[in-house]
Image 1 (cartoon, rainbow, N blue to C red):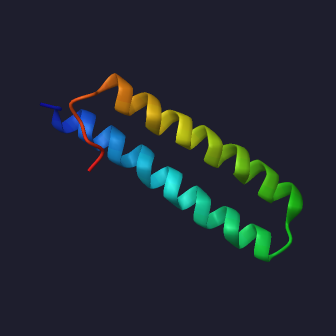
Image 2 (image 1 turned 90 degrees about the horizontal axis):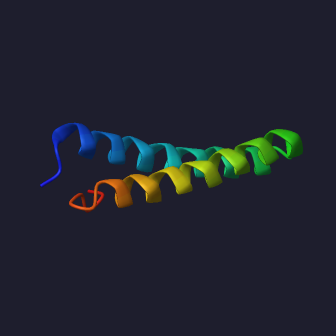
Length: 63
């Protein structure tokens, strides 16, 4: 069973992943290309982090 801190870390990583995607969509709408490029990298890193935390804490289902 995942600890409360582990679940919190996984949930925070998922939140950052979701929010960075929303921000990326907004920046694309605003045609802010350089900022969108940075945000795309942020989103990709957030995805990697989320997957790594799920692997590190396999008893956590991400919810």
